[in-house]
Image 1 (cartoon, rainbow, N blue to C red):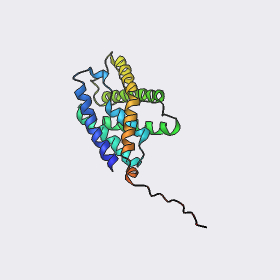
Image 2 (image 1 turned 180 degrees about the horizontal axis):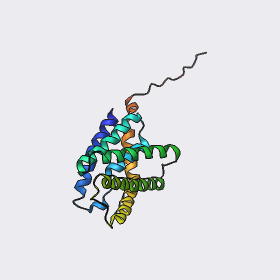
Image 3 (image 1 turned 60 degrees about the vertical axis):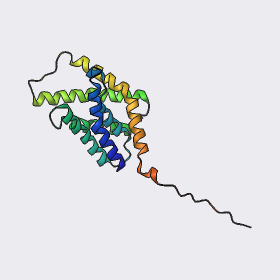
Image 4 (image 1 turned 90 degrees about the vertical axis):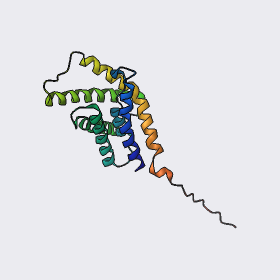
Length: 179
């Protein structure tokens, strides 16, 4: 339960911090905190799969509310990104930084393209501009560079909040029989 509450609070405040950082740096040069959090959950969530799916939807809904996009777009994309990261982590070794960076770059590009497709479907008058490809590459690169640190940070938080770590281990020593 501690893990769920901590990740839910992190999902609530991480996009706010990301928005505050946009005052000091251009928006394209700031990593996508919500997407990195969802991918990190997909790679390292040790608990119930239902709780992780609900957290992924929560992260997406918070992003929807703070970004002003159509409600449910980021939630759907977060759910797909979580599922992709989870399935790929089962089949491939994603513990090294280069593999994590490649995964995040691919999922960032996929989520940006999916977000553009959903927006174009529901709002046909808002099409992508000519600079969308350059922005997509830049955004993928920035997220990929931040991926190992974000995944390690979320993994460390999950390990620290592990429900079993608060219990004391009872050691049973074998007794020596006296002769």
